[in-house]
Image 1 (spheres, rainbow, N blue to C red):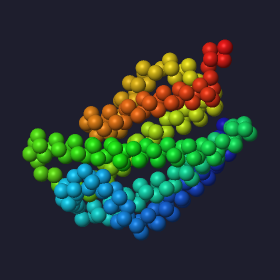
Image 2 (image 1 turned 45 degrees about the vertical axis):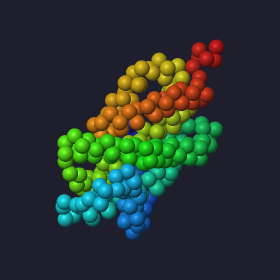
Image 3 (image 1 turned 60 degrees about the horizontal axis):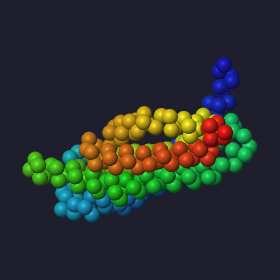
Image 4 (image 1 turned 30 degrees about the horizontal axis):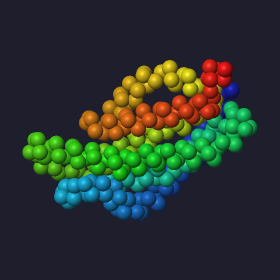
Length: 243
């Protein structure tokens, strides 16, 4: 059995090596511009709460260095996403038909665009509203003075952006699974209520413990689920639709 899996493991190792190598190379490039990138990451809180942004600090000696590395890695990962998606497709391509293998460019573009849309939605909408709500809650209701650690801020920010980027990949996964014949629109309609529950649970796990950010993730995901039904209906319609 190991001999049968050996070619697949070799191919997987190759695709992972290329993906990781791309991230490492881009990491060193991004590290050169980490100050500029960090200013971009700080823009949402500076725009909404300029007085708070002046109080950003660090509490550990290694925090600025580790933050610069984290920012560089995060940016390198985002830049490398088209390569990562392409390597994923190349790994699964041997199990596809010839006409399906031609979808590599649309798949890479669609996956990259959807992740970017999720990240941009988070950056311009979710992050400002969430930060303003959380800081106002601490200042107005608890009478606390905000003193934000740059390391914790970056961790909080990157987690949100990656969560929204991955969440927006739902139509891409639907397209992929429908193309393989694993799901159809009837299947998605049947489990709609359960899926909505899962979406809200997922949103609660991936966002801060406040209703605003959870709501801002759950509602677009429900809309993307509806889009996924239309995609599945187009790619792999159920037998009932065919009739």
